[in-house]
Image 1 (tube, rainbow, N blue to C red):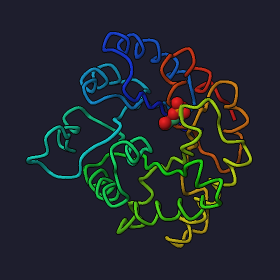
Image 2 (image 1 turned 90 degrees about the vertical axis):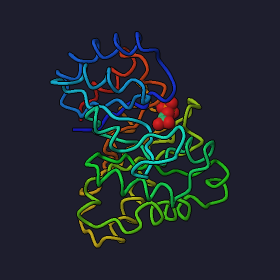
Image 3 (image 1 turned 135 degrees about the horizontal axis):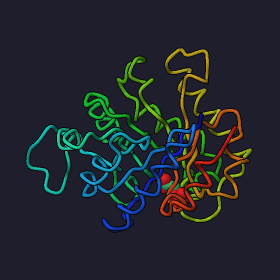
Length: 248
Ligand code: PGA
């Protein structure tokens, strides 16, 4: 079983998503993989209605950590609960780079997400420059230590991690299977060391960054890669299906 989770970002219309879920339903039903879709907030009522009683898991792409109050434009955990939200993407590189989210903010969101009973999908990843100057491991370690501050070992098991090299996101150029595998193994080792975990298989890490039909087999067949977080190739059911069909 692999995790195949779509990140729709700021795409699709209401009508398109309605059609999308209707088409995805039998595909998710027939699959042994975990099929998920993270939608824009405004489509939560639709997702909650259409995914009920199906094998499609759904979530959103961000959340604010405060309980309530004067936070114009933000969405709280309680608001998400009203629509049976299951997963929340946190610390995506677009949130970090465009909206200036720091590891501290991501950490507060991780805590709040777990407290609310949602599954956090905690994203980490290095930029092209960081990879080229051999800073990848340091950057990932900093993001992990910062994002997981004061998270207990029990709660750690509730988190799905997503390693998404920034240079591979939306570029059509994914990491090689060797690089993705080596880096994800490193991510698991760092977490295992932080928490005294012996079996790396207890830690779930997905790969994200230009994952699509023609590279899914080679990337997901790597032993430490537990699935994918998929942007572009999750927007059409026809494309997403090529990933969901992964067997291995
Ligand atoms: P991509 O996006 O598949 O379009 O590269 C992945 C992501 O940003 O989660």
